[in-house]
Length: 398
Ligand SMILES: [Zn+2]
Ligand SMILES: [Zn+2]
Image 1 (tube, protein in one colour):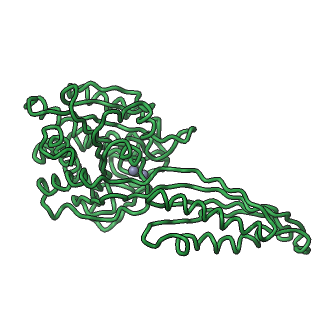
Image 2 (image 1 turned 180 degrees about the vertical axis):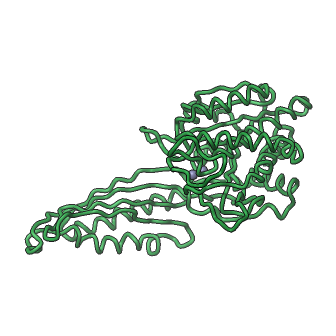
Image 3 (image 1 turned 90 degrees about the vertical axis):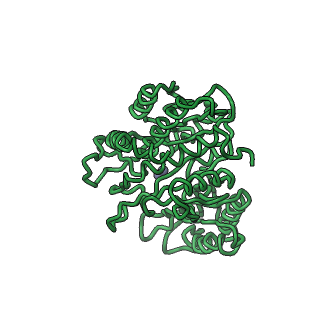
């Protein structure tokens, strides 16, 4: 599979650059979806468009049997690209700054290799592969739904036994592949809170109640939640991103607004942080004020099934050498693939994709870029994992 992936390297690079030059924002991936559908049809694969609004779904293999899904996201970000690559964005102010262009190109490469394999040896295939080209990983629509959920609501995950995906990592060494079992990326919730008092004249603080003063002890209590209230063996982050209040030097405001982010792995910690945040804010009541708290639940934690990870580790070692498969902590970022991994046994790996010149091109920055040499590697690992799944060369129900 690795040789075959190298054979289509030019095609992978061409597709990635085409998508990179024509980035589209979340749930507006119309051109990208059309490119995906056209490429699949050229390969002789029927594609269904408009799934989860702008997603594309296709099957390779027999009509039934055990089914493995492979997911790629397609959306870009509202960033004005600053690097001057010849394939830079032609859609001013929109940029593929997370590598989803590479994910889409690699999944099209996977489609090519698997369709070839199925045509050559259909009798070996006991199961089938479902290609999931997903819109809007980066953000929610007006109903608070991201692309993975939209696909699930359109039944795109129905009947799947397993689902796999990769994410390029522009800060990790090119060609190495990173795995983490069980909880890896975080559940992400955001919150807004208002601490309220009476406000009043700055010269007469005793005649009202002052929400700015209340905020002092509240901040202490908020920052103490992870360190004093949560089991140190369970990851939890509580960070504020905004505090705003007041407009004049001699007026005590009647309200302070704060907002921030909560990150955790397990559900129990997730609820505990929320409850403790509320308790910290309730200090305002002790000090003569009031508060309001709104928590918006975001992406759940990504749970990487150890069995599925095991398949991909073995494939990586077989194709690229055992030293290529590295165990690593993924950190407290988030991915909406987590919703798909709740529907079927799933796992995502990180594909190191740094350009080796000393400059780190971080995700979501205006100089983001990846090393295109890794495109055949990701393609080969996904395709070979799926091939082994459908041909029974891995123990599917371990
Ligand atoms: Zn991103
Ligand atoms: Zn991403």
